Image 1 (cartoon, rainbow, N blue to C red):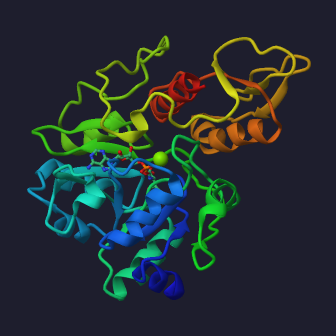
Image 2 (tube, rainbow, N blue to C red; image 1 turned 120 degrees about the vertical axis):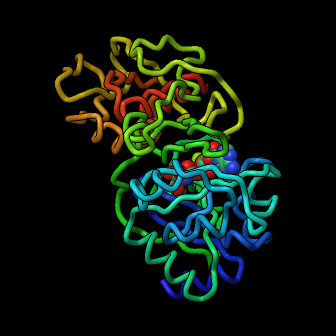
Image 3 (cartoon, helix red, strand yellow; image 1 turned 30 degrees about the horizontal axis):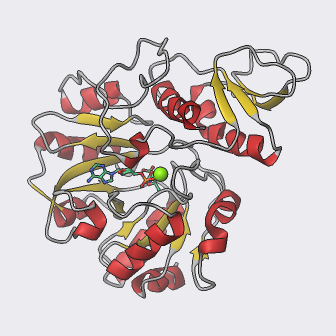
Amino acid sequence: MAAAASHLAAGGLVAFPTETVYGLGADACNAMGVARIYEVKGRPADHPLIVHVASMDGLGEWAREVPGYAISLARDFWPGPMTLVLKRSSLAKDFITGGQDTVGVRVPNHPVALALLEAFESIGGKGIAAPSANRFGQVSPTTAAAVAGEIGEYLDSADQIIDGGACAVGVESTIIDCTGEVPRILRPGAITTSMIEQSTGIQITKVISSSNVGVVNNSGGVNSDWIIRVSGSLENHYAPAAKVLLCEIPTPGQGFIAHVNMETPAGVIRLASPHNDEEFAQILYSALREADAQGLKEVVVMQPIGIGIAVAIRDRLARAANGR
Ligand code: TXA
Ligand code: MG
């Protein structure tokens, strides 16, 4: 951890596990280090990055005018799979925020991520900027091997990938815009609408997501505006090479991802059989990667219909299906 922290302080890159997906980290105050994130990801430079901090104290450093409801969310769900977008302090430079006056902050809930953040802060670091450790537009990695497969060839020999096993949540954090009078969900995740409502005492009326773009949303759960502000909102984000088909009957030669109680038709390649929605989220990205590893052209996914983390799963799948 000490070696990884000093590598960050020197402008290097460290990929590390979080409970959601693996992140590709750089010192959030180091313009050169952050520039290398964009290079390695092949990501447009005006897309803002999430600043990861060791504790809620980081909020005061990176943000200003933090509303009461955001403090309540931070108290209830950090460390955890939630990113708060707040008005930025002078610490958050344009190279972090994509030139916006806001900054995304998160305290991840993973022992390795927290140990790295603490080691980094103990040598004077203020936070680690980290997007998901995939090439731009690709599926987020949920294992160290997937990170190496995605970006290994673009890293320097001194850069590091810390292996912390498979991520427990499996889909990216819930992003909540906390710059207005009420919270707005920019990206659904494991912290759900009802959890946010319970924590803040404020009713959430709209989910900003792409779930209803170009697909029929049969869940009744998500209905909303569509804004391209979050890079993950691009229609073809989170897409594997295989074509993703939603809720069709799979035919021979196609991959298939569905809850365990659905049978696999003859000749269909079963990629995953999760027992519940949490497990569905956990294995989704590795199952999509497996489809690519097997060279499958198409993969059929039976979407979960629930309103908890299933909302985030449908959101990502809608984009994967829109992709290629
Ligand atoms: O679970 C996660 O959030 C993972 C782990 C590594 O923490 N990180 C992640 O980062 O998913 P990334 O960069 O792949 O997605 C973060 C999203 C991007 O779509 C970015 O546009 C959005 O957060 N974002 C960051 N700062 C923002 C801001 N100030 N305003 C609006 N959106 C912001
Ligand atoms: Mg990402």
